[in-house]
Image (cartoon, rainbow, N blue to C red; front, top):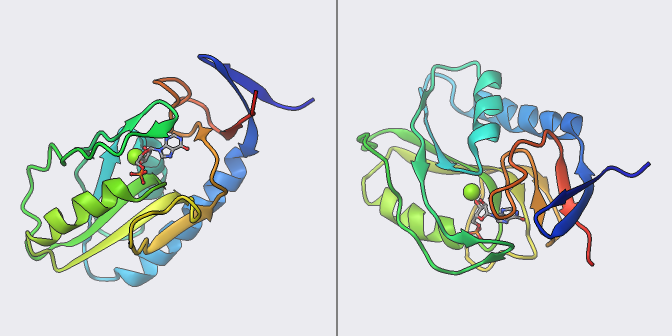
Length: 180
Ligand code: IMP
Ligand code: MG
């Protein structure tokens, strides 16, 4: 039987299983472990969507690392609003730090293209992006996503931290919207 979930007014079908997600997390962590030996990176996950990825990613990191969550709101329902929010909650000096922004998903790239230049102005030693998911066909900004767990088609998804109008963040798997 196909695994379906109903959230608000939409139906979603299983897209990436928990074990596929975990192996993508381990692959991102493995690269970070290799690239940051001796460096003590500061991971900055962007809330809310990235909380689950950030938690699992940190458990796989074998380095000394620090964590500081921030918030940027730019998404409304199933469509990117294009309304760019600023970063809030960064109460840490990032000058001279090796910063890794942690995202659940890079979709249009608008959020990151707003946030990255603002962070760069604070002179980090390095600034990279780790995203569990990337929709290459949705990307509208010129943006380097340094660590990508999985590339996915341009369709709306939920689960593993990602929501549809507030629901679905608690799902262990990732689900894809079923066209009505
Ligand atoms: P972007 O600015 O379009 O790259 O995406 C910003 C944020 O929108 C992401 O960090 C997610 O939190 C959210 N988002 C993008 N695509 C999806 C999706 O398919 N499902 C749920 N949230 C999404
Ligand atoms: Mg996000």
